[in-house]
Image 1: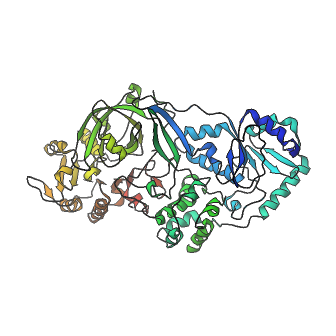
Image 2: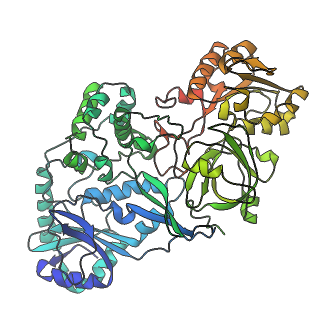
Image 3: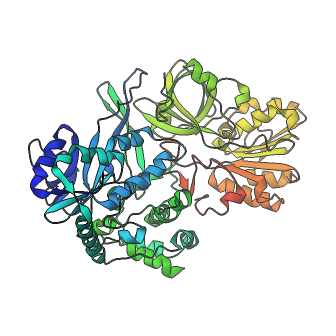
Length: 337
Length: 282
């Protein structure tokens, strides 16, 4: 199937076709959007900016049961594979992140939880035509309409959506709605390219990552880490909201005799993250933790997987309560060379 | 029956025997453990240096080195210092109680590659736990190695683990065992002094020798210094690292020292590798 157009007047019909399936879409939550199951029978739109929490939670839930058991017994019950999921309105940076993190969850030992969810999920992207102030995805190899990690890309052309199938999953979804679609043709393609080009021009911030993975290890004792960490509150917002952060904790939860071992997002910005039981902490202050966070994304991950674990979504810059700016830090790294 | 395709699902295991190695606030208790599932027990294979995730359902899991050599039999042994939530709960276990085991994890000491060499272990306190499998492995394959020298120290004689096992070593020509404690004690017949100094005094030749050290960070630092003074090359010096871990197979993210994951790339490293990793001895 080639690229198609979905007239916005048919949007409600389109969502109706999806109604038998589990859909996560951007849903207004106060003055922000988050990915959630839209309320039954309630219309939802793709008219949103950039969600606060990345949709990584669809494949890597904030808390996830590894297995259940009863106290005093030894039978372990891992959850059954979940249902198929359609993730709608994913920004290309966030889709790229899901793909990047998959490398880690496939590395050496397959992570069955992540990979199963990934398999069951159809990721429908929406090109980012109004990039935010701190967006810098092109510097990391992405773009407002980048397709990596997507099954289907949608681009808002005003009156209609441009739909570009990218995988079999994307094609099957479009097949379901084929009655509502019309050929995009050359004109549709041109309109789409023009919209994407305008979006690219709106991106103001850039990072020169050239050589950064190689420079970072040499800056181990550089004062820039102390300076960057000086204002840090250690709140972990940068990591929780980061679409490529994948570190987790494992804890047991008990309710009566029912118990589960679960994993939950963790943050390398927390003291407990690396604290040994002895009381020794190999990363005792925020300086070491900040240094690790940047090194992990921009150097360690690159050494293992040959790609920087950052997609330039700008969340860590936007939502840092003390305005620590990753882009600034990376500029200092380059200058310190 | 454990689903082997799910690396998070542990084996259920039974404590066959448990005993205290040391007493006090941070006492060390050893556990001899057997996996319940027959096929798991048969297919389990570990090498000296590897670790396993030991847990109690409803309490949690922690990573421990496997403190026995595969040459000792189809069981596992862990030596656990009572320190935090999981280890305190483990210390309550008695023979017959159940626990969970995942693993084995990490790389191992290259026992094959070391054949024909002299083995020198330098341990301090609970740091002897990952070295014990080397000692036992060499004892079981003594003709493959050019002898073993063990230097082992602790604060007091009580803090020495595996005490009952040292006497037999003194009866074998190819094995020598040098114990030391930090402060003088009544009735103590061995050396008094710190481990790094004992190493210098014994003055082992680096020729055809592999040195492996494990213990408190401060001890390791001075042992490394002294091994260099004795002429050991970086490639001849091994140690094992430990860091907080959750998964054990490179996903949870926290055990890294620089770009190396202790759970996957380690826990066994040569000094030649670690000297270039800034966080290795942090």
